[in-house]
Amino acid sequence: MPSFLNNITQLRSIAFGKQHFWDIRFPDADPPFSEWFPAADVTWGVANVVSYSTEFYLSSYDFPQSYQSNQVQITFFDDIYRTLEHWIEKWMTEDMFPGTNENEYGLYVNFLEDIARELIIQKLDFEKEPIKTDSLWVFPEGQFDFRGTSDSSPIQHSVNFKIVGRA
Image 1: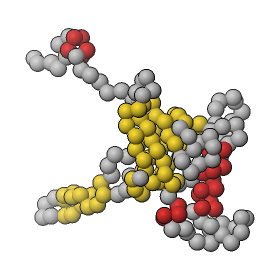
Image 2 (image 1 turned 180 degrees about the horizontal axis):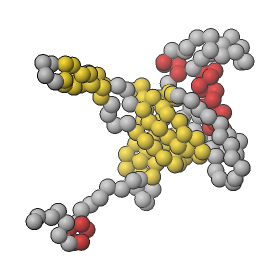
Image 3 (image 1 turned 90 degrees about the vertical axis):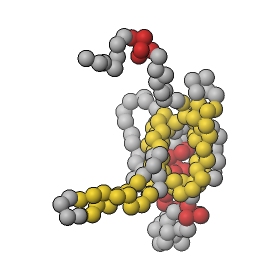
């Protein structure tokens, strides 16, 4: 009976893929996050195709219908002053849904060109050398939560960003 794995040498001959380190940068963010800083986790939608179903005589078939914009989810660490948390909160309230004064938000939705910010993602190898750099125009999507715990772990945030273009 044929088998895929005959011995361990056959398994060692395969060059398996590796996860890499990531650095990110928001050029418009408050310092120190306008410079490179590490991302704890990056999940990037490579493709997003929506299909539709249609009925024929005895069965139904699915066909590709449209291509939706991708998103990137980033988990990152913040500093002791919660600089990035405050910057993203301001982005999601004052910048996206401005009002007439600083305590009033949501009177209207700003234009996409005023909402989108540049996000630069750099994939690094194990020696921290750049493999690939991508520059994207994004805006945050979904709920952004404050999370407090009674331990000494670093402050982490996870944010979904909708990709609206490449810079």
